[in-house]
Length: 194
Image 1 (cartoon, rainbow, N blue to C red):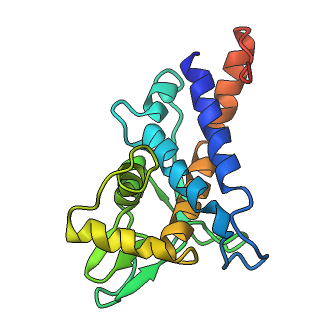
Image 2: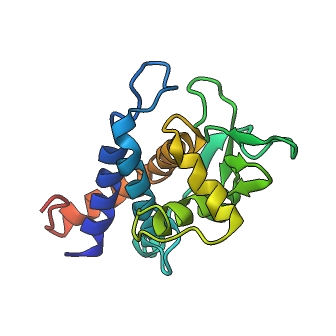
């Protein structure tokens, strides 16, 4: 299997994992059967954004497209004394209020906090991948990791909401690259779906 198929398959896999995440139109209640899919999506995000080399950098090596992660403009702005918070990274449709980030900037955003701990996009992906079963099923060893794992006890909390919005922002950021890879694979006679 070539890396183009892996890239395209990974994006389709993420789409399928977040499909049906919410049980209502307001998108404030998560389907209780989606926790597994959302955690597994983090393993796919790790492959795309964090592994060395990232699948993203491998796919964009020759194309050299500008990849921008567009988030809600309030991303990262929470008072330090909040006991628990989360926010959606996904920009509101039609609001015109958003921020653009590089990959490094996006990974540093902190959409989730519990107690004294703040969790960046990178930490959420890492902990879901290596502790909660996104790739490996490990043990939480630090207080920070234990506080993170405790938050997974309620499906309608910020961890799952944050993962969903991280996936949405990433899929939007990769749109042009995905289309370019699809065109390239067709031009050289390789079906993106074969």
